[in-house]
Length: 205
Image 1 (cartoon, rainbow, N blue to C red):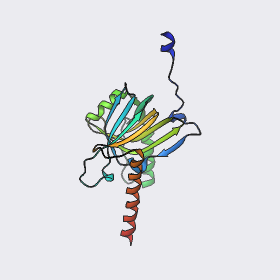
Image 2 (image 1 turned 120 degrees about the horizontal axis):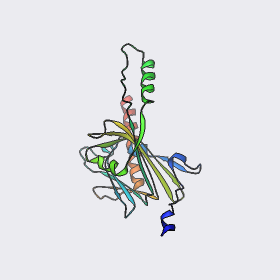
Image 3 (image 1 turned 180 degrees about the vertical axis):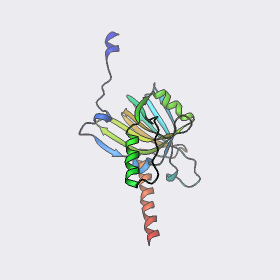
Image 4 (image 1 turned 90 degrees about the horizontal axis):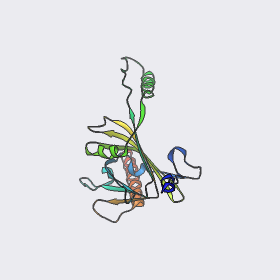
């Protein structure tokens, strides 16, 4: 029993120290500007499931949600950037360059703080996370998912949040139960941005 309690799960993959042989894939094409509206863990099944609203990937008026599920989750972490509580304002009449420098200096005073995963999940009762960036790293049988975005609602007032999960599989589905998988989600994102580019070309002509 003592031996079992002292054993630690093998953690070969960590986003902070990714091995050089990792295959890192941007998920921006599909998830950018989407919103995570719920997050639920199942400790027995070792899964974490995100329910996402990605309106630009759907026909206008559709209320279909996209479901992302990570399997065999071994690590789940969330952090938020807390504003520096001191007074800050940009003086009138400063140049754009000086304004940018002042804002950058202000942001350097913010502090990254971890939040408990149960607290993170419970926050979606009143808040949602607008996704600004997302990446997936793969190595052998392991994956690392990193999502960054802006948490906003009653609990968080537009604070940047980073989510990192380590697992062994990722799946995607739709709330309307259409045949769908993770590659379908990426293909749908590529199709949208290709179509968006074509529309811009037509407007220019």
